[in-house]
Length: 366
Image (cartoon, rainbow, N blue to C red):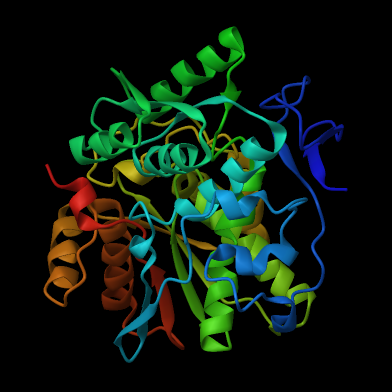
């Protein structure tokens, strides 16, 4: 039977727990080992991420009343060396729908009636939408610099919004204070590891669609929502011998907020407190990621290259893709900016590369 396990003391909890973390203070990981990945185990009659449900810790069919048809985003070849996975084609226009669908399945399964969550916007949109579908009350905390388009989307799904005067990290702290004092269920894409059981389908889809994994994977890195899911799925594919070796992984941070880049440059095993400067890449402007130690472990274990996106190149990257019919938000543009900058600097990258188009452009317009 699947459940949670504390990353600090090893104590195990059932999926039905309402606690956001272990009583020792440690964050949860999944206590779940999926079967070996096999294309034959995919439910090809299901057109959502739940076609991969045999590789997820699902214990019932309630996902059918939660899904909004998330997943199965197309892969577009931008040029001979560059593939784009169009995750902004999701129901709420961002890749976060992958994780939210599984997280709200869990809430529905264990009878949660009301949730709170903190977000820079996209995860809040996703959780609000899936809560609306599942009939669960929802309150989202967002920082004051969040795009009004994202705030309006959250409200449109019937969720209430708390705008916090301060940074993304301060917003998380205020939300967690409510969880601690009021006992409301914390539907967190950072604290609850079941979220990554949804984001790992990003890799499942690439493998199913292409019949392989590209040589290079570029991933935005803030709280690690997609990064952790990607590494989880790649390890599953390797363990199943579906792939022979791991691709080269590049993680993208904003030059205005790059705690992992700073740590790797110093060869530290954990991040230090940094000054978070204003950036257009609001989705990855996380100065104090809660899973920093684990993310750094993965970085070192898999020889991940950390790149930073230059602020003055984000809009140029956005315009470059828009001129080819691909309209993305600023955080996604930061990934493309770092990618093109790397190619220009190094001149060559062996094999082809795939980048996630994580969020639609309209979401970050004023």
